[in-house]
Length: 245
Ligand SMILES: [Zn+2]
Image (tube, rainbow, N blue to C red; front, side, top):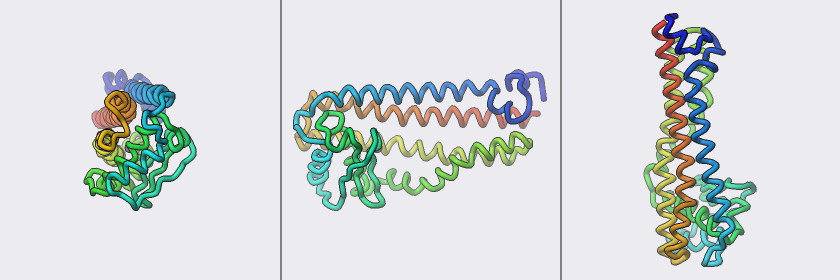
């Protein structure tokens, strides 16, 4: 181990602890800060516009129903799911699950979130390719994200470069998933705003505020991707440092 490597590793040397407390740990801290900031901004935008009633007087579920029918979609179910911000569209059973604060709420935020989930339903109905790619990569991404770090740490502890590289490749699958998620989410939100405007559910002023809610939500996906790229950079730096020993 060279002196520069010792400095780089933060002086903690080999082993498990070296992985956790080396200088590259700063990258992890940066990733955590980014994702917490994005999540706080999203929650504050959601809670602010949860107190603003929607002009149409529709609840999230009613707005979703209108938007789906306007898009000519009649084979999807809208259900109520427990929790806060747990809303999602499930392409497997064509179900739009809306949470406690969205399903029955007549707020601007609720209508926007419901419309966003409709955006995913329309993507599915129209065969939007990135959505299909994302669904296809889910199993690989799940395996990748659960195995990447353990494999990498084993490679680091036993100084087996091939294992470290395998860990990085596994991690890449998870990064690719997040990369594909980004256009899927942004597209669902832009569809949502277009549909809300097209159906006359929201006027110009409301759409401007709606865009704020949905942009804040999109930023959490950007932050998650940035965080994963920082983590990837960290793995590459650690593997490179070990290669030079
Ligand atoms: Zn979404």
